[in-house]
Length: 224
Image 1 (cartoon, one colour):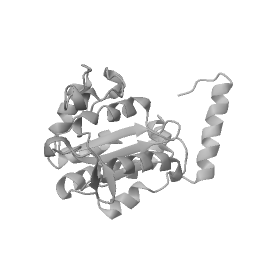
Image 2 (cartoon, rainbow, N blue to C red):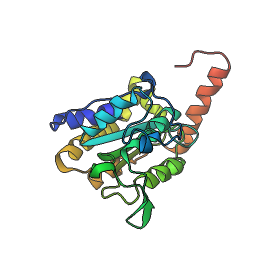
Image 3 (cartoon, helix red, strand yellow):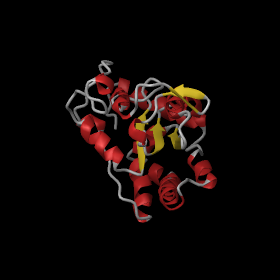
Image 4 (tube, one colour):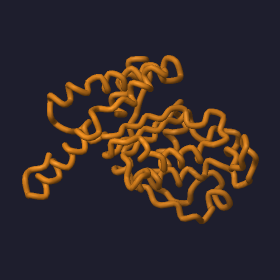
């Protein structure tokens, strides 16, 4: 999803970079608050999160992308989000209609923020917990969460069947157009957003396909 979105963004003149958390060494936040009291603005841990924060600081927009794990983001992405704590000041201030921590030194907490996620279930409501957490993170911020792209039945994107991939070619085209629009217009049009929400196939057909796949796997047959 992100790769295809980036194709459109690049076509519109953007420079893009992908950081895979699985390839990095990022320790868990220790809750010690040293980034507020001992080394203000910097975590006392020295690992790859320094690079992640530096890249964020140089970016106009950031996509947080994750498959849905137990109705939320992956532990690897959660660890990175928690480690952004040095970017804010410890004092509590009113932001919009709620209290939060102000951005340190008047800088941006995050650049313009997008969330991409897919899941194996066919229904959109399975993302409710993930969306709720991101809404809390960006509540009260001027821009909030700029764009959200969710893909139920997302496992179909990786099925190596040419006929199936051709059937959902329209989705890849919409993702590419979304990237172009976001860079050129600062937002994804409502038309493209609605296209990205369309089902790949009827729910009953999808569930039957998935269950048949796992039945074959459980019988010891090759599972792509």
